[in-house]
Structures are given as C-alpha cells and as structure tokens.
Length: 406
Length: 149
Image 1 (cartoon, helix red, strand yellow):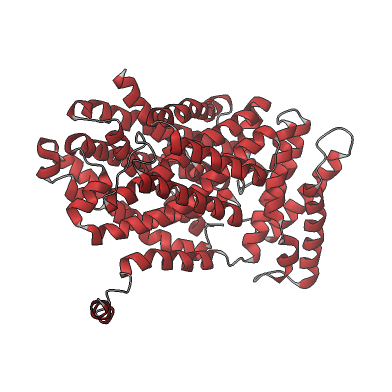
Image 2 (image 1 turned 180 degrees about the vertical axis):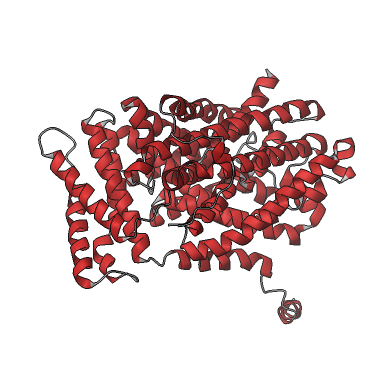
C-alpha cells in the first residue's frame, strides 16, 4: 500500500506538475507553430527533471530535509533569499495561469464565462490546500489527470505526416527563429520547473520517506515524469496535425481543445475540458503548496499539510495570501495561456539560481552520507546546470526580442 | 534604540538587499517590454483567434464539439479581441492607411460575429464562418504569414 501511495506522488507530480498550464501552452504553441520540430526540448527537459526530482527525493529520504530546508541551512538565509524571491514571483504568474486554466476547463465543460468561474476555481484550490489531507491532494488530481492520456491516443488515431523520431534532432528554422528559440526556452522552463522539485521533496517529507523509499523514489521520478512527457508530446503532435494546417497558432486554450475534438468529436472536446481542469487544478495545488513550503521552511516556521491550520498558522496564512494574489493577477491580466507562456520563460530565467546548489548539496556527506552522487550523476547534473545557465541567458534576450514570444 | 536604528540606516542595513529587489525589477522591465505590441504580432495573434473561432463554429455544427464548449470558447476568443480593432491601424509597422482601414473593417465584422456566434440551427452560421475565415486569412497575409512551418 505504501508503494502505491508513493507511486501516486510521482503520478501527481507528472500530471499536476509536468502537465500544467505552462507545459500545455508551450507544447500547443510549439506544435501549432513549428510542427514536430520542437519535440526535442520536451525530451531534454524530461531527462533533466527526472534527474532533479530523483535527487530531491533522495535528499529528503536520506537527510530528512526538504530541498529548500537544506538550501537555507547549507548556504544561509542571505543566499536563500535570492531563489526564494525569484520563485515566489515566477510562481505567482504561474499560479494565476493555473487558476485561469482551471476556470477555462470548467467553462468548456459547462458553457459558462470563464471569468465568472474564476472565483469558484480559486475557492476550490483554497478549500483543498486549507483542509484536505495530503493523501487526497495526491490522489484526486492524479486520477483525473490520467485523462491526459487521450492526447497520446490521438497520436495513434491521427498520426502526423512527419517522422517523430526525425524530429528529435534540433533544427532551427530559417524564418521565425527568435520565436522558435523563445519556445525552446519556455518549454525547458515549463518542464524543469523548480516548484516541482520543491513540492516533491516536501511531499516526501509529508509522506515520511526514509532510506527504504529510495527505490520507490527512482521509480516514481522516471515513471511519473515519463507519463507527463508523453502527454506533452501528444499535445504537440495533435496541435501540429489539427491546428497548424488551418493557420491556428494556439493562442488561446479553447483553440488547443480543437486538436482533441477533431479526432474524437464531442468526447474529445469534453475530454479536453476535463484534462485542462485536472492538470491545472493539480498544478495549482502544487504551486501554492510549494511556495508556502519554501517560505515556511526558509523562515523556520511550522509547516505541513497534515497539521491543523492553527498548528501551522503562518504556513496557512501564506497559502491564503498567495492564492488571493494569484487570483487578482488572473482576474486583472486574464489570458491564462499568455500568462503561462510568460511564467514559463520567467522560470527559465531563474533556473540556475534554483538548480546550481544541487551540485554542492548532493555531494555533501553531512546530508547524503553513502547516498551522495556518483560520477555519472554529477556529470549529468553539471550538464543540467550548464543548460539552465544557457536557457536563462537566452530567455532574457528572447523575451525582450519577441515581446513574450507572441 | 534610536541610535541603533540610525546606525543601521547609515550602514545601509535598512535598504533591502539587491538579491531581493533584483527579481521584481526584472519582472517589471520584462512585463513592460512584453506589453509593447507590433502590428505583425497583433495581426498574427488575431488571425489565429479568428481562424480558431471559425474552426470552433464548424466543429460545433459538425457535432464534433458541444454547444457549451462553443459558448465558452467564444467568450475566450472575445476577450482576446478586446480593443484590437481600435489599435490595429495605429500599431508600429502597420500598413498604409487605406489597407489598414480595410483590415480594421474586417476585424470589426469578425468581432461582431465572435460577440454573437450562431451555435444553433436558427441562424446562418456558414456566413459567420466565412466572415471569420476571410478576416483571419487577410490578417495572416498582412502579418507576413508568420508561423514557421
């Protein structure tokens, strides 16, 4: 039973974390604009996030500390302020996008105006993080999120004309190369979201992982993120098949849904509403909890989803304030898809700050003892950190050059 | 106590550290940069929205999408078209006045369709679809047909 619960943690992080407003938007935009040629960043990002998630789970299981706790303890509060403030800001935009995604998902199922549904979505997210036990937060979105497999089935029902394997080789197009590179950065930002790492390691602490959980950790990191990656590739392929020939570049989430309606009819349209709701709802829970974990662990406050609100008052206060701010952002700015694209590029910008400390932490015998990184894992981590620096430098220039990739 | 506070102020301790101010400053600069529209970008985005609206109309009437899906989708398309007709001709990189005015007229007609889409059999949805398609195609051509491929 414990194994099943642990694997569900992985599935949750894949559906709610991997597949969220950011990854749906970036994959859809990529497929609708550039066909199959942007599958490779999804694959690269998936390999990177598998590595990062495995390391953060191993750190939590062996040291009994979540990633942000270890960050603050090992590098000091002054250093911790940089990743914390960057994370709080970028995740604010992302949470606003997730709330918008939940609302549009509900709207597509009911026919209501998504602006009207937005307060309901914020209240649903608030109710879950306020009172639901961590187990329910794991299980509910993960079961609903399985509907994202419909995008994988769509590849079989409606195969693309190009060869998917050939598309794995990076190839920058002659025209629109700035937008292409912007989408590469945004896909990597959406795929390697640090909040996933923060949430996963704190979730491992909530589930009281120990050394005995190490094998489960490896399994869930690979299976969970692999599942999310397949669905993201499915979205990209479906949009390249249905939207690109019509000149539709997936600038709104309703346009993305047409890529499932074309092969599956009304079932596909309803399925898309459900997928959008489930993935964005799961991600909204993760993002809001990840930020509350980060802040509470950084300041040394009581934290934990299993604790009553009064026992972790400041942790819960952060949750309330953060959801309220994200709701306001979503209401004022609107356009969840553009918010998600912007948040993904912003996350790409802060990746080095959040990921570089892994290199030191994962080789610290005080935390990892005999479970420190081996040579190969260190080499892979160095590659990911270099990638993060490249993506960050490029995303700043490309954000300005493309005006947000539009 | 006062002396301590004054000392801190003199030493600059009251100033929030750069590492805290840097991310918000960066975000403000990026948001400002990203909010500057150009004609090509706006025309290309609007074209996608209009062509998406035309496809949604077709899907609803072909039984591929539900009426609630269509209704909610058109609300989303409508909010993306807010103010576009008013600003299109004045954006940097806009074509000559006569051509720009022609595009604006097409966008206005298409916006009227998006605001009141025909999702049942009591009205001429095919005419609406043609309006959306022609406005979308014209904007796509005017934007230089960006979109890679």
